[in-house]
Length: 161
Image 1 (cartoon, one colour):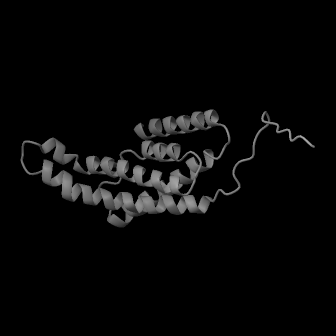
Image 2: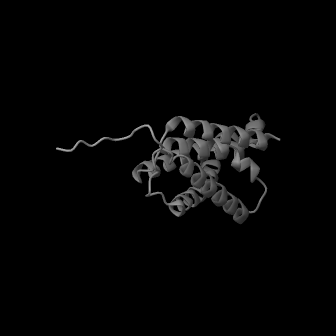
Image 3: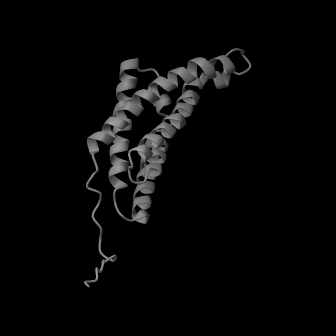
């Protein structure tokens, strides 16, 4: 009887089932969900709780940022569930890295028209989901984590400047 010998030391091929357009579509849908959740959280939760009195004026002045951050957490959770359902490799890395890079998106787009805000949210979420899901296809976890952490750190430094 023949013995099958597997060579585990060489580089392994990435998954052939990767679909960048599916990731872009998921990211675009999450960008729309982010915009919608930011509006809903701001209008129904943050503004009624913190903007009713003059005592909390500092919190009320940053209500868009707070509602955007809450919406970012909700969208990351929704995105994680979708990616797990679709059997995407390392969905937690994709969801957390996207949330980390786009943290504060509502304050970046504050003052723009609603169509511009939706367009930027859709574009940025789609790009992040495509980028991080593409990086996550690699077979080994350590290089994936190093690359993702490096990209997130560079992006956050650039955004602070």
